[in-house]
Image (cartoon, rainbow, N blue to C red; front, side, top):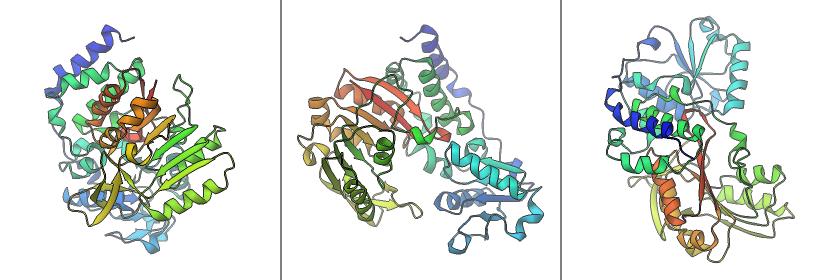
Length: 383
């Protein structure tokens, strides 16, 4: 049950919204050589943002340096050329590494000799004058200056969660997004536990699972690896090569009696969307009217009519609201449990919980975070 103290915290947030301090520049990283660990798409975007702000990184560190197309010098971690910079350089981990991977990378770099190592979630991005990098990574197309305008909906979504921890995370996310300061986010849960919902006080039911944004079947493997039962499985993954990997894995699983592996995106209608693919990700695409690639999409209600799911999972690069609309009949008929990502746009933090409750008022909602900077945040809905 919500306490008056919890509601007061939210009221205070809106009262003091206009008092967020102005950016202070990025002088802290101007005095030392800067190295970016990870020469992938995210590292390249960070490099461009830093250069735009007058900071020229010394280069990249990447285990696959030989095959890199980064815009600056790329070195393997133990390259002799980096030895003079062990003590004075700052290394930023320019990738989305979970808690376990983050620790392993830090230990490896420390053993080599590097002394100053920071992850993206430890950098105060409000100090960067350009918002391009932050906007691409963390807040989608939503303008944080509109938070006050959307206060009524935000409050309504806030009240759908019951625990103090959930309210604290919700408020922290709003504050971090508004201030462009992702250092405010708390330590996430282990990424390996995403969708398993071990700390959610409900028994999750994966017997008939619809997996939207199935990638290479990582969620399927995780669930089966935790000794959960899946008897029917439907995967939506636009990339055909990944669908083939999923299908090959399914053939090895004797317990899965019904399987559908569909090379489609998910929406609220049958349509073709233009999108931009992420260059270093095997399955990462964002809807973009100017994109050159075309993605065929379909509504779950049309493609899987009568499937009777017990769980629907969605991690589909910001298409979650439309995909939920396209699953209205399935949700209202079967009341499946839901695991919906809400981190692709700031507004999804409140819009998606409200949409879920509108689809079926009997849902109990829980919010959990599995990655630094508020990424990989999931809302679970249980009837």
